[in-house]
Length: 170
Image 1 (tube, rainbow, N blue to C red):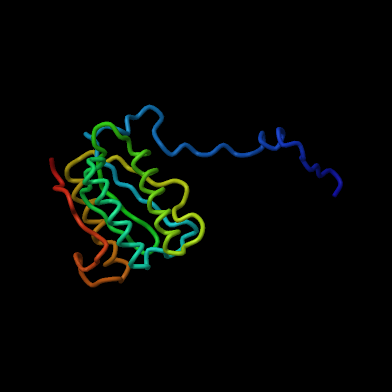
Image 2: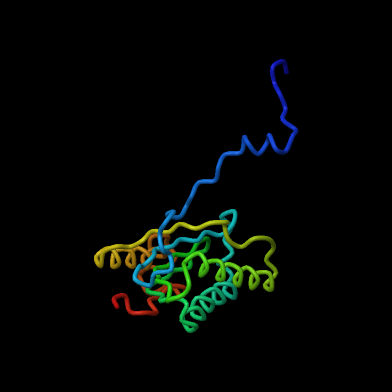
């Protein structure tokens, strides 16, 4: 069409790509064990891979492994068919991005062994720093109520892929 211009030079094309939105606070210490984080990780392409019981058990096993290796304190979690909610703190010497990187790498490799193809997780994740004791309790209730709200079980505690492994208050 007249007036249309197609950019074919890769250097010029990069100028027109929108900058990726920063998801983490620029100067925040994500390695502080004094903070508690509410995290949500979503399955890639909003598939339902966690309906597979072997994969679901492996994901929960990976979280427990990180607890046993003193990488995290896991206060509350719930693995839904297409996403995972976590309420956790990192232990000394490891930051949240590293915890999530290790977790995603291990669980994606596990999924491939179970004949899944491609990426298991979306590229990033949602994080929220929980600041107050009352908010901790509300977030944990929200996490544990997720399967009830989605009609997967009738009452909290009936979902096999949720729990509160570590005491909520230190």
